[in-house]
Length: 329
Figure 1 (cartoon, one colour):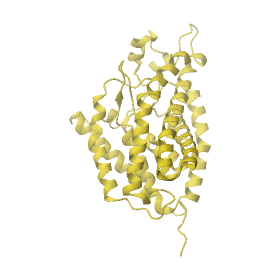
Figure 2 (cartoon, rainbow, N blue to C red):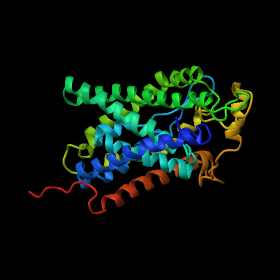
Figure 3 (tube, helix red, strand yellow):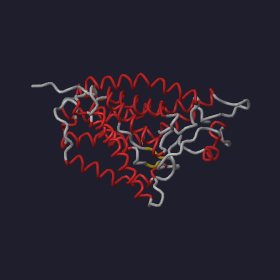
Figure 4 (cartoon, rainbow, N blue to C red):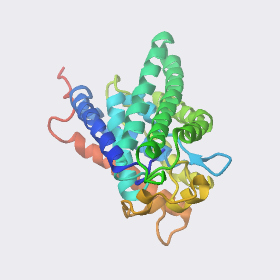
């Protein structure tokens, strides 16, 4: 679901980024006012879970892949505004350092995965939790909400892909950017997310949420304290060490192919906007470290990503005025 650069027109990227600006602004305001200051470092832990979840690629027949995102998981722990910020920062780190998702398309990727996904998932989850009380309702709601959230996010991405050939094409009718119309992009995106990738999101969300409720309940927004238990740290380490499993999925996610792959998969040509588009040289492209085995590079990338996210949000928690001060007893 990480839209690369040059799949969307610069105009579309600009519109999506402008649409996200007020979402980011409101999210920052809500987190500063409503989330206790001692809980702010937990946004880094949530971002780490999202970052790692997106490294576990799953294969579908035909050579395409996909992954969980974890947006509803963070929303259930810290609220949808905190989830928006956590996932946005994780996506920015992926784009800048690992070349996973585009720089120009960052706003679109955030709109889909940091806005649509967590807010829709959280709305469904809280509605169900009001009917089914206790942790059972919370987990049931998180499972159903995460499924709805990731599929709405996939639908949004499919629409963004599908309108490109309608709006941006040359005099011969050839698309300048993504060449797949809505009749292709929607079924292609939704087939995987309504089945395997949606199920992966449910399992990832419910298992981690259930684990945190047992071993580190202070991470939840409404609970007091903000200690990361030893069990949670061990679990994060286990996820990091397991990330090379994502290498087992061969192929590339639909909508993330290179220009040559586009020409070979039905378009029959390379869209001019892709051929002469924007290029960003990332430090660790595709989580591969030069001179290291793929598995080792993947683990090192996971360590770098998790450490950067945790440290960044820890530093943000030290800023004056960022986060609600604890009331004195």
